[in-house]
Picture 1 (cartoon, rainbow, N blue to C red):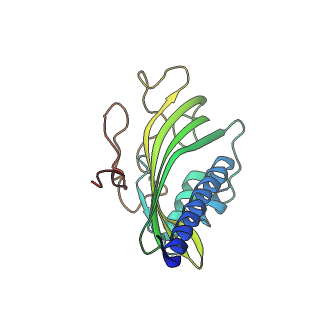
Picture 2 (picture 1 turned 90 degrees about the vertical axis):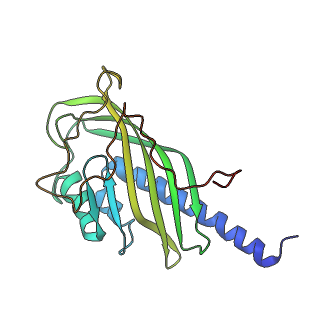
Picture 3 (picture 1 turned 45 degrees about the vertical axis):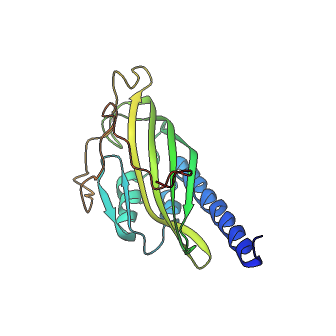
Length: 209
């Protein structure tokens, strides 16, 4: 029979998982609405990095701010482009809280429906797009609150609605920005049809391998 201490630890772990899932979902809504300042505030001041698709790695809180505000938003005073839309559904989440209860990892599928430029983040004709990718994120608990430590999104495909991923696997990405350069090149850029399996953080629940 489990001791009171063991039961308390289980309850705490379940609550931690719930709070991390909530954090990830809230990130998704802020992302979809283009509220990038609020996205930045979800990261720890000691955050490690952000890496998305082929943009490269932005290390530390200030570089994370550069990524979301200067690159993705287009500057702090930039206004949303008319007709732009991005809806990212974060599904099939697996959260693993480390034994110390202070750090955790999470994996999620991202399935996106978008209307966005196809030449770059801010230029080109708006087109209807499907996109799919995988998040492998790290979280840290500070002052009783879970925050992002590291966010990594592996883009599998982003394809025009009219074409499909067999014909046009990726549009709208052209490598690291020259205007808002990353701190390091992309570590993982192998979109469809490479067949690359983005490594999972968790162990097999039965074999433990």
